[in-house]
Image (cartoon, rainbow, N blue to C red; front, top):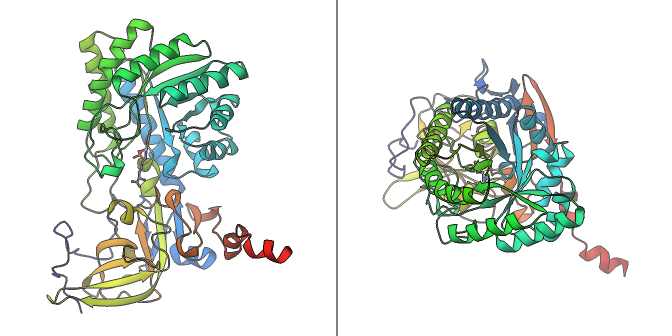
Length: 468
Ligand code: LLP
């Protein structure tokens, strides 16, 4: 038996009183265990889901997504109404987009932010009104822009001078006036992983303020374009309001300057609202975040004596992250003991970095629980790893699980709804898992899992040779 006091555990990880417990902030609100101790998601026993759909499996709790979408919509609507303006909340589809999810979030009052034509087509296939879609990206192609303008997309967030001309040409050719925002780089470095921070100076997104002024002047002289406001996004997985407040204050300076050239109805402050991945993460409730961020922008506008614009936000992770739970089957376990005597149990599951690249990409931390049963056996320090041919193929870096975790157990990793499936790959020719939506005791596949036939379908080498 491994000691829970194992020295390989990081300082932040505490030995749980109960290694079967489901930390409230990390799991969907409806997650529970049945009388036998097995995990139930959205009213569906996980073992039953696995019988029907296999493992690995991403289970997405529809009610949790809807509830979070509504919470963001309502929190910003309330906060902005208190200051005499209104809000637009865009779901950032890059977190995870499928037609079902696009439908759920728009039914709950959100708009949709897309950053490629692929995401745009999924939103359109879901029946999302194009006027409710915003189009991002630092390198939108001419054909992507033409498609977006021709379907009547609500806004295009331009990211460079080159793009302004492209959008103007497309809009003029199609005979419409395209509403555009200009993405600026506010220079605020959000306290998050470097690759998740998007507004420090030396990176590809947004325009420096000086260039943005020239860009807005150019947009205002082009009859096929309508300038509706500035956009900034400081990064992702951000806790607290300090970064948003600082960024908004800097952007308001430019916003005020630009008012000399005409009205500016909107200000988009982007997304980045953090979620809990482990029990040590403590995100600020959305009602409080919305009140504080909107309050800060309203105070900034009042100080400058300028009208408070409509405020837009783009949460992705905070809408779907906590709604997703990935279920794996444990294949092997192996205790590894170092020369120091410290040890941990490696628990290998039947997926890995192909369905969750976040630990490998960002050193992201997750948590895990045995899903098929509970156990009173004292906890052991484990590292959950995947089946890929890489030592960095880690799913959960540090966790305590009941020490009798064994092959055949189902293992659930919560908070995997955002940026797991959307970043999934076929590394090592592992098929990507199905996504199953659960709600109140029912389940349905919303994205089917890949088969080996799918993997071979794009491999044309041998058939070409044989056919020749
Ligand atoms: N708006 C813009 C312009 C963005 O670039 C992003 C995220 C969002 C909104 C949504 O951010 P969220 O609310 O989801 O944090 N793959 C990384 C995250 C990359 C985020 C990219 N942009 C991860 O797994 O953490």
